[in-house]
Image 1: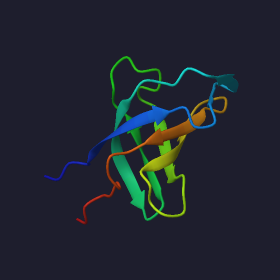
Image 2: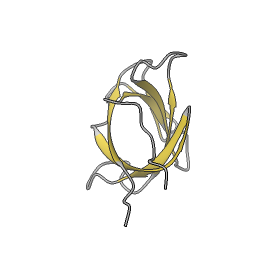
Image 3: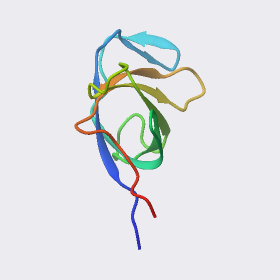
Length: 97
């Protein structure tokens, strides 16, 4: 039985964060997410980190730069806009089944 990859996302300040529609200078804590969908420049999954402000929410990651730099734009599914920037250790991908 194959399991979906777990990736670590480290939020960074970038141009600031928008949490629930409000600007926030404080960067959210790092979190893990289960990668559920992977395309060349779009990755989606669910936050797994217990107690994290984004726990259980769906997250979409897109590359921040044209060439892969490890930095991503983070959009969190929420009632009001929640987004910011982050860093990944590796280019995420789903293994082929």
